[in-house]
Image 1: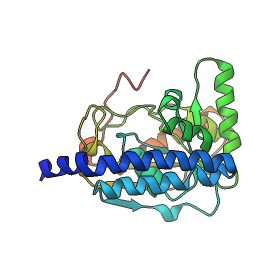
Image 2: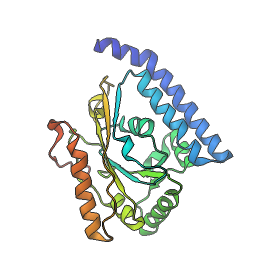
Image 3: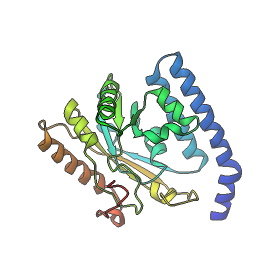
Length: 252
């Protein structure tokens, strides 16, 4: 069955998905230029992500979406198991949001320009002024129920275990007094791990935990929220992935 799936993904699924990716990027760029970047920056990407999972025959389960309220803006903090995290969150979290992503992703053909047009936020750590500009852009995006998704580990895991959380997302939540929503991704690592070359068919589960409202303001609140979010995300992982394994690349 594995060989048949590899043949299917090479000969049928991947060519279709390449065309879908280019079309989605073009629609996003043109739609955003015409106006309504909040709409065009989310819905084409949502449909694209759902189609990718559909054509690759990847089953998806969602838990906890009912915990999110109305048009409230949140800062979502998921673990980062692999490349398919993007499709799981974009396609199935059910909230309009902006990504906070590495600056290097802007260089991706079509996709980088589409992300820029849609108002997704590229993190530039080249200097204090650039960092402040990134924070300002994030604050400007968190309006009218639009949320933000940040991978607090900063990079994909090598082992399936979670790495340390960095404080950037939690600092922003503290500054704006917004609730942090821990999100657990399970299954993406089995589909395409960081060192993998082939896509493997495996179910993905997205678990949305209870929002963590601010309990104050300042470093004490940030540390407490980070610890609570980490414990919540880890709680929905399989036992084999619980317990931190230090990843040197994630700590850079």
